[in-house]
Image 1 (tube, rainbow, N blue to C red):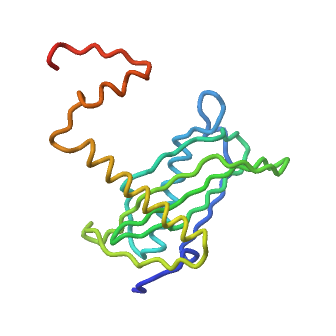
Image 2 (tube, helix red, strand yellow):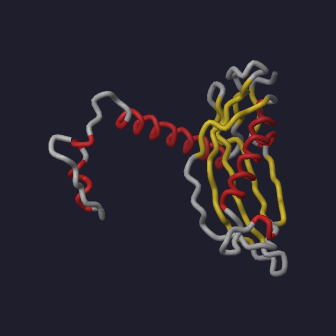
Image 3 (tube, helix red, strand yellow):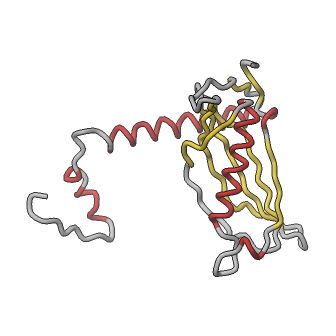
Length: 184
């Protein structure tokens, strides 16, 4: 197994014409269908980098920026943005093209964390990543920061001494009414 691979060596791009069967009740392409395609391309990209089976561990925020219409050509581009020991963060960009006008719109971007597995289902080490341009370095650093922020958030909210009482004052600026029983 190669110990390091370039980002370019595992880039994946897929395109698919959006059909009426992919739409929701408002006639737009169903977000769940787009997520399904994103998971597939994340798997393909991570498997191509690691040369093994991969599973989805988590999905970072998915913001649907613009609706996708029936008849548009959706293109998804994926690349490895970060590698850990057995994990890989796959960055995905989703664009939709109106095939009549040629207008392309950015519909969403997301980050899928994928884990490489062996035949026994155990996590295995993945090749390192060769970063050979400024964009790749920035993407790697941003992934590191997202991972650090997630660890901090988890440490803050998942410790044994966590108490909602410590945070109630922060809720005063929100549209919420706290109506807890006494001593709750």
